[in-house]
Length: 455
Image (tube, rainbow, N blue to C red; front, top):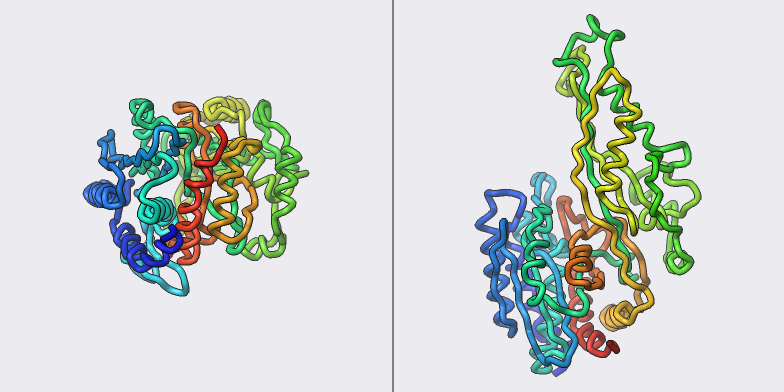
């Protein structure tokens, strides 16, 4: 029996197992679900043991880590697989067409919270490994699985766990399936992710909300000032005006541009997908370059003054906004946080006080494009999907990939099975049954491809 034949034979059981995994409301951000998160970790540990892995859970300062290993041969390469079993809160519940923790298949899609991010994709890797073990009696690699329960909260306990267990986690490369394909019929291997830096800005005016008739025109309005300050963060060409912001930014490479030109793209379709009348961004760059290769600055939310029903004629005492900046390689999150703080305080009028809370972030990740691991991943995807993948970047961030590089010295292969429209973090999250199956096939081929890499 081949691994693919095993996958065909166990199709119903694999789906039943996935549905059980998805049924746990493992919402890491809510204390009320602490027991559900732990129960999910315990179930996953036991499930991995039935496949042939030595598995256990490790406590952390928050939710437990599930670790499992299958050590086949000391001479074989060791691959570290990473995923997360925790999920985003499902709210608003009223927008779900079916309960978020009662998985359901409709129109060829599995609907459930975590279906794509990241239970479904992680489970595809697990089931691919299972198929190889059951069909061949062993693996051609040594496999280590590190599956955490706090990815959606950024609690910060996993890096400490990795530092403490460097010897246990020793490997040659990391495999992560928490990204997307380029499109429904165009698989992809991601070779880069942007980093992120985050700040919260507070502008203070009078010591209390005051009457806009009695004081308007005599004192600064913090909301007005904050809006003006935000408006100074970009110039007319879409470039960020913070001094030194682009100091470490390198040009988009020829190889990257060549890869992006291979990707199908329609500006009209892109606008229609998002429901916008026109695109906007840094002048001189394509849509893919703006979204994947250039740094950005965005206000994620802004607060100030009265926002209830009816009117209230006040000058608010305070206004605030949350800002995130997507970073490219060589940009340091805290350096960028310090630069925006210095700039905002410099341009702020003397009539207000400005405070900036700096939350730091994570650096960008780039996988070497001239190494054998990326090529091996591409061949595995071709076998699983029936088509050679494109190589692309994504604009989002996976901070743990930076920790793998800085703590363990390991590059990360980003092999995603989901789609850009799978509604991750949104109501009606979904994962195509076909993509789950193709992901399992890819995962079943990947060990042989990685075992053949010349080290």
